[in-house]
Length: 148
Image (cartoon, rainbow, N blue to C red; front, side, top):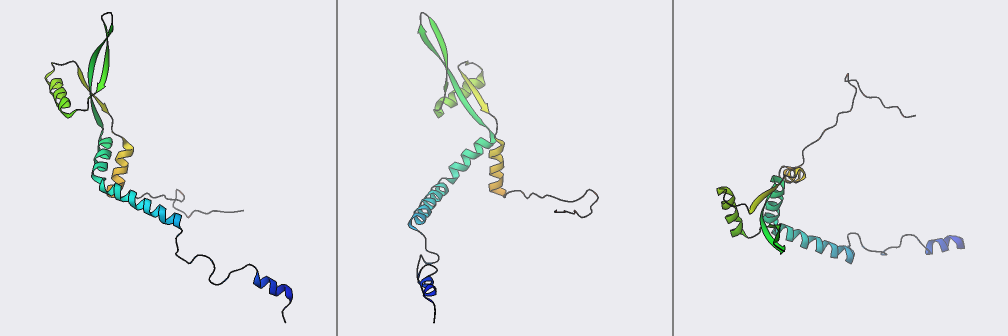
Protein backbone atom coordinates (compact mmCIF):
# COMPACT_ATOMS: atom_id res chain seq x y z
CA UNK A 1 0.00 0.00 0.00
CA UNK A 2 1.18 3.53 -0.83
CA UNK A 3 1.98 5.98 1.88
CA UNK A 4 -0.23 9.06 2.42
CA UNK A 5 2.57 11.42 1.32
CA UNK A 6 2.86 9.59 -2.03
CA UNK A 7 -0.88 9.87 -2.66
CA UNK A 8 -0.86 13.61 -1.84
CA UNK A 9 2.11 14.19 -4.20
CA UNK A 10 0.27 12.49 -7.05
CA UNK A 11 -2.84 14.63 -6.60
CA UNK A 12 -1.09 18.03 -6.46
CA UNK A 13 1.05 19.49 -9.26
CA UNK A 14 2.57 17.85 -12.30
CA UNK A 15 1.13 17.26 -15.72
CA UNK A 16 -2.57 16.57 -15.91
CA UNK A 17 -4.17 15.01 -18.93
CA UNK A 18 -6.20 17.53 -20.94
CA UNK A 19 -4.94 20.54 -18.95
CA UNK A 20 -3.58 23.72 -20.57
CA UNK A 21 -3.85 24.95 -24.13
CA UNK A 22 -3.59 22.45 -26.96
CA UNK A 23 -0.44 22.30 -29.09
CA UNK A 24 -0.61 24.75 -31.97
CA UNK A 25 -3.31 26.89 -30.33
CA UNK A 26 -2.59 30.61 -30.68
CA UNK A 27 -3.58 33.12 -28.04
CA UNK A 28 -5.96 35.94 -29.03
CA UNK A 29 -3.10 38.46 -28.71
CA UNK A 30 -1.02 36.42 -31.18
CA UNK A 31 -3.94 36.15 -33.62
CA UNK A 32 -4.45 39.93 -33.48
CA UNK A 33 -0.74 40.54 -34.11
CA UNK A 34 -0.82 38.19 -37.12
CA UNK A 35 -3.85 40.07 -38.54
CA UNK A 36 -2.02 43.39 -38.19
CA UNK A 37 1.14 41.95 -39.79
CA UNK A 38 -0.87 40.57 -42.72
CA UNK A 39 -2.69 43.89 -43.24
CA UNK A 40 0.64 45.76 -43.13
CA UNK A 41 2.25 43.31 -45.57
CA UNK A 42 -0.69 43.73 -47.96
CA UNK A 43 -0.40 47.54 -47.83
CA UNK A 44 3.33 47.35 -48.52
CA UNK A 45 2.69 44.93 -51.40
CA UNK A 46 0.04 47.23 -52.90
CA UNK A 47 2.43 50.20 -52.73
CA UNK A 48 5.56 48.28 -53.75
CA UNK A 49 5.95 50.14 -57.04
CA UNK A 50 5.85 53.56 -55.36
CA UNK A 51 8.09 52.37 -52.52
CA UNK A 52 10.65 51.01 -54.98
CA UNK A 53 10.60 54.26 -56.98
CA UNK A 54 11.13 56.32 -53.81
CA UNK A 55 13.95 54.06 -52.61
CA UNK A 56 15.51 54.13 -56.09
CA UNK A 57 15.50 57.93 -56.07
CA UNK A 58 17.24 58.00 -52.69
CA UNK A 59 19.76 55.45 -53.96
CA UNK A 60 20.58 57.40 -57.12
CA UNK A 61 20.41 60.90 -55.63
CA UNK A 62 17.71 63.52 -55.25
CA UNK A 63 17.22 66.84 -57.06
CA UNK A 64 15.29 69.83 -55.74
CA UNK A 65 14.30 73.03 -57.53
CA UNK A 66 14.20 76.21 -55.44
CA UNK A 67 12.79 79.64 -56.23
CA UNK A 68 14.19 82.82 -54.71
CA UNK A 69 11.41 85.17 -53.60
CA UNK A 70 12.30 88.77 -52.77
CA UNK A 71 10.23 89.90 -49.78
CA UNK A 72 9.96 93.53 -48.67
CA UNK A 73 10.51 93.92 -44.96
CA UNK A 74 10.04 97.70 -44.79
CA UNK A 75 11.92 100.92 -45.44
CA UNK A 76 12.92 99.72 -48.92
CA UNK A 77 14.72 96.64 -47.55
CA UNK A 78 14.17 93.22 -49.05
CA UNK A 79 15.23 89.76 -48.02
CA UNK A 80 15.62 86.66 -50.15
CA UNK A 81 13.54 83.63 -49.23
CA UNK A 82 14.41 80.26 -50.77
CA UNK A 83 11.22 78.29 -51.50
CA UNK A 84 11.08 74.64 -52.55
CA UNK A 85 9.16 74.33 -55.84
CA UNK A 86 6.70 71.42 -55.89
CA UNK A 87 4.33 72.33 -58.75
CA UNK A 88 5.32 70.26 -61.84
CA UNK A 89 4.49 73.09 -64.27
CA UNK A 90 6.58 75.59 -62.31
CA UNK A 91 9.45 73.06 -62.14
CA UNK A 92 9.30 72.71 -65.92
CA UNK A 93 9.33 76.51 -66.34
CA UNK A 94 12.20 76.83 -63.87
CA UNK A 95 14.31 74.22 -65.65
CA UNK A 96 13.69 75.88 -69.01
CA UNK A 97 14.58 79.24 -67.48
CA UNK A 98 17.77 77.86 -65.90
CA UNK A 99 18.75 76.14 -69.15
CA UNK A 100 18.38 79.36 -71.17
CA UNK A 101 20.39 81.26 -68.54
CA UNK A 102 18.01 84.21 -68.44
CA UNK A 103 16.58 83.74 -64.93
CA UNK A 104 18.35 84.20 -61.62
CA UNK A 105 15.37 83.29 -59.45
CA UNK A 106 15.63 79.48 -59.64
CA UNK A 107 18.36 77.00 -58.77
CA UNK A 108 18.70 73.23 -58.44
CA UNK A 109 20.08 71.45 -55.37
CA UNK A 110 21.22 67.86 -55.46
CA UNK A 111 21.49 65.40 -52.62
CA UNK A 112 24.13 62.75 -53.12
CA UNK A 113 23.16 59.10 -53.53
CA UNK A 114 22.72 57.09 -50.35
CA UNK A 115 25.01 54.03 -50.24
CA UNK A 116 22.81 52.25 -47.67
CA UNK A 117 19.80 52.60 -49.98
CA UNK A 118 21.84 51.21 -52.90
CA UNK A 119 22.95 48.21 -50.81
CA UNK A 120 19.40 47.59 -49.60
CA UNK A 121 18.04 47.60 -53.17
CA UNK A 122 20.78 45.25 -54.35
CA UNK A 123 20.22 42.89 -51.39
CA UNK A 124 16.47 42.79 -52.05
CA UNK A 125 16.84 42.44 -55.80
CA UNK A 126 19.81 40.09 -56.06
CA UNK A 127 20.00 38.57 -52.60
CA UNK A 128 22.53 39.26 -49.89
CA UNK A 129 26.10 38.73 -51.03
CA UNK A 130 27.77 35.63 -49.59
CA UNK A 131 30.55 36.39 -47.15
CA UNK A 132 33.21 33.93 -46.09
CA UNK A 133 35.73 33.88 -43.28
CA UNK A 134 38.84 31.74 -43.39
CA UNK A 135 40.38 30.67 -40.13
CA UNK A 136 43.81 29.10 -40.12
CA UNK A 137 47.53 29.68 -40.01
CA UNK A 138 49.45 31.57 -42.68
CA UNK A 139 51.27 28.39 -43.74
CA UNK A 140 48.02 26.45 -44.19
CA UNK A 141 48.59 24.20 -41.19
CA UNK A 142 45.54 23.31 -39.10
CA UNK A 143 44.61 25.75 -36.38
CA UNK A 144 45.00 24.29 -32.92
CA UNK A 145 42.92 25.70 -30.09
CA UNK A 146 43.85 24.76 -26.52
CA UNK A 147 41.41 25.27 -23.70
CA UNK A 148 42.81 25.23 -20.18
